[in-house]
Image (cartoon, rainbow, N blue to C red):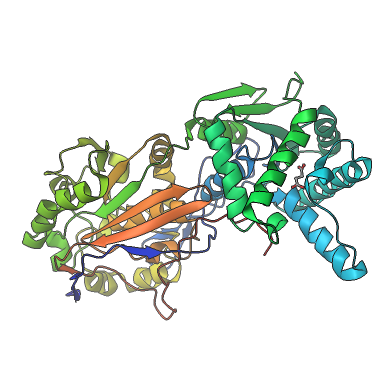
Length: 495
Ligand code: SIN
């Protein structure tokens, strides 16, 4: 095969956006789960990897915290991570339920409920009762969803009094095999609170859709004060809980047991909210790319070397004097691409390209000829197809978990990687589904800048005007996956 030449003649940053969707990966089994389906042999020499059985993992994760303390941010981050580990996760947002019920009421009876700050006052007995009912109803829906096959249901509400937590605890205790943990978010940094308030009033929050920004801000601050008047931090010694203070500063754990709860705790311990960007680029064009071969450990082609020479300028234009660490795989094409970058470098074995096993070093035409059944099988379910003696995309996602954890902990990072690896990382940051993941376009000689935002990730692409082959193989007989739109607005609002 001689891949088509691609002309990256524009050095253009492109702003693009997308709606988030789901994507997941394998991981260790919980004690007591049924045995996973063993890898299924397919016609041919490879096999298919099965999704792990998480059917016994059932957790209610109840958020605790004042408004504007990042509860929805944490809920959504955690959901994305756990979905990536292939758990079935859903956020049940009580504010969203309140708004949709109020809309129904207005349609049916014409009565508009007042949801300004007085609605959230403890002295408003009627509204307090309504709010408790909404929290209970939301919990009921969550429990039903867990019974129907969910793993982690996140109760996204303030749950800021002992009595509310006692209600949740008592209700969950009635369900065999379902456990509750509380996640309290405390924020004492006025700048972060102010930013969260600004986000609430400026991001199209339906609570303030017909209100001026100034009035919305005043009202939201009054609402926070109403909650503060009755707020009780978690002190109940018997509860399982995690308390996060100023995301990234301090995490307190109490009665956290078991694999899934520990994973949740570990992930939350690694989060921070400092502004930073993650840059990703494939290695420069390699000799194997030019020859149309997959895998191997070839060195860069002359055009690949040109890219390596041009890369430091592009990175410097973007990052200026800010600190940056460069991560490469252990393969020489990534190390060569990074060789002129004047930053600290780290080599990760986990970043090595998907192992094509017996097909390593072959062209796609050679694979099709030698293993026609495998070629077809891989096209049919590329995420799960495992090369004989090699890996599947699912295997790669599992081995990338420590990389993701470290990426959450770090600040500015540039990853010089490989096509399959960068697809997996990209899918994590943009919450893309497994079926689309193996077809994400990550062209050569392009730097992708990902900037995590409160609710998603912004993206810019910088293409260097150095020609390279196109190694992308589209999904056969299927409409092409468009480059996703990047959307960093709050995703949990009523649609
Ligand atoms: C809300 O209605 O917006 C939040 C409800 C709550 O948890 O207090």
